Amino acid sequence: MTFGLRYEFRPANRCTFQFTGTYLHGDRFIINQRADSSIPRAQRPEPFTSDLALVEIAMQLRLTGGKTWHGFAPYLGRAGARVRREFSGDTTKSGYLFGTKLTPAFMTACAGIPPGG
Image (cartoon, rainbow, N blue to C red; front, side, top):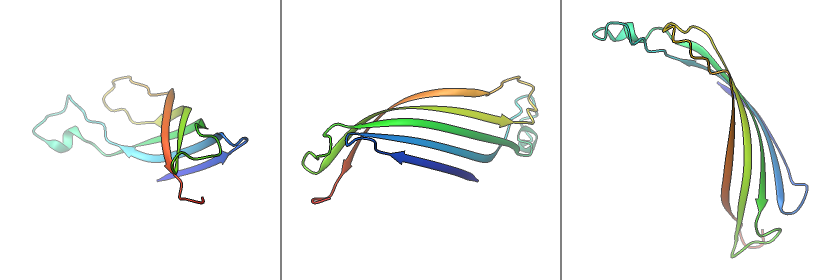
């Protein structure tokens, strides 16, 4: 189950800012490599709760400003996201902790705008 909110605003004709918050309530299976491989159920026990929280900030720059080029409006953008994962039940004793990650991203897009739009 996933819940999210997104807020987008355009302070200028060329620029758009986006703020996104998402929460994913999920499950995952942990494969136990030390278990007997002839018994499939032994390697994959019950699912464990694995929740993710994502916060993203993005900026898009419309290359043609308030106009289009032959009905297309190309964009360039930059985004950054921070992901936090809550997880319990590591039966493999691997010690891996996902914790909080920061992810940068670059964006390109080309929106088709209908004539007169």
